[in-house]
Image 1: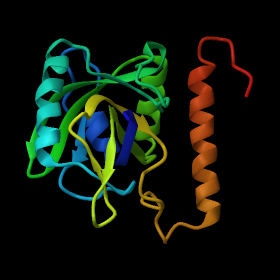
Image 2: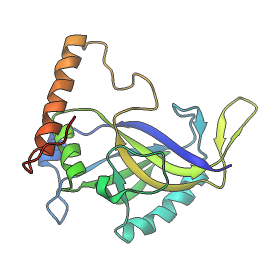
Image 3: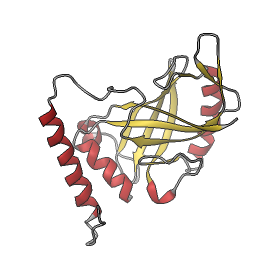
Image 4: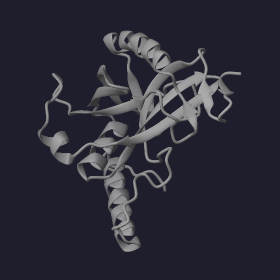
Length: 200
């Protein structure tokens, strides 16, 4: 049976890349990084064959060409891309070994402004593929994604598939609290910039 399949990994963007990097023709910032990796068991215990990803990337390039390759900041457990939550659009996709690399334009939407502020303040975000497909367990107990898989989009999220992959042993609890207080302040500032603040 087909279900929503979500896979997340760290998306490493330096503030220097965001602030001083190449801009899109629109003037919006561009970032790039790994979107997916084939031929390995991921943090959710799932395995995607490379030919499956190749097929879906070839199809998704048409979506990119048609200027429809949008994604959300955080994602629902849904096959629908909610336009009011769109934060970015993918402009290019290519392979580097078994990695799918993407060039992404951050849009000046409410969600895009939050994403940009988080990255500018060195907050680690994850990039998460969203697709529909079924799973089958092989002899080794690995869940293989089946041929009916259909890629929908990539979203930016806070929670990685691999627990702890954003944590560093050198950071104490106090530093973490300060970091998240700063993030909350940035998000509140953006949401309240129109003169009305939502109730938290």
